[in-house]
Amino acid sequence: MDLLTVDIKHAGYSDNTEVIKNVTLSLKPGELVGLIGPNGAGKSTTIKGIMGLLPVMDGKVEFAGARKNFAYIPEQPVLYEGLTLWEHLELAAAAYEIERKVFVPKAEELLKLFRLTEVKHHLPGSFSKGMQQKVMLIVSFLLEPSVFVVDEPFVGLDPRGTKDFLAYLNQARAKGAGVLMCTHILDTAERICSSFVLMNAGGVIARGDLAEIREQCQLPKGSLLECFDKLLENS
Ligand SMILES: Nc1ncnc2c1ncn2[C@@H]1O[C@H](COP(=O)(O)OP(=O)(O)OP(=O)(O)O)[C@@H](O)[C@H]1O
Image: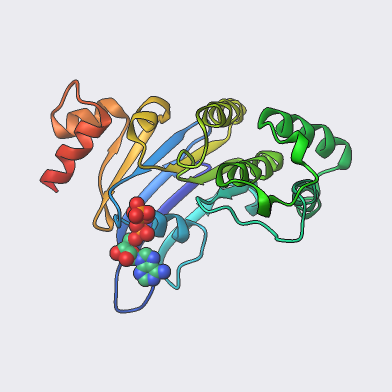
């Protein structure tokens, strides 16, 4: 069973410009699919299409189960100015009807994991970018979605934050969640993703696990970066 199936025929921001075309992908429980490609390839546009945020969209996006089973973690944190970190978590719990006796211990555990317990009553507006990103991660983990859509998580996080984030994400995958992740950090992507969708100029130019990608570009021992370079040269 697929948690998410995407079949975008074409989509964009206005009627006369087509930004992405023929983008298909699917996500199964436990999978971590890396959406990769150079600047301007159409990765964020694809993510916006999946979330129903594009003005022009011809295609289909299907989530298994309820809509609330899906968490989007944007690259730029989106926070409410007047709310403390703890109030952000309370708001998420209320919006998603998480019982208090489930919410409180889970929120405390996540704050501890991401080392934000001491600042839980502070306003996230005063936090560093990485700390703000951690607030977004905590909110999404709190919701226990079956699909995570994550946009470039590695740029703001410090190495320990990255490690903790990936460990927690793997726990969620072990419980059956699927992850679609957009990133430019290809050595990390190579290590953690179960498969890849490589985009260029608005379309998909290669897909599969590393072995399949290597076969497609005929670099049997190539790194993801080397394969990516060769596929881009030939596309
Ligand atoms: N809001 C917008 N309105 C019009 N065109 C846009 C908008 N956002 C992006 N585009 C265009 O869509 C194309 C794809 O951009 P997109 O942001 O999807 O690329 P990306 O692969 O996510 O790139 P990056 O790695 O730089 O984030 C680009 O040509 C860009 O100029």
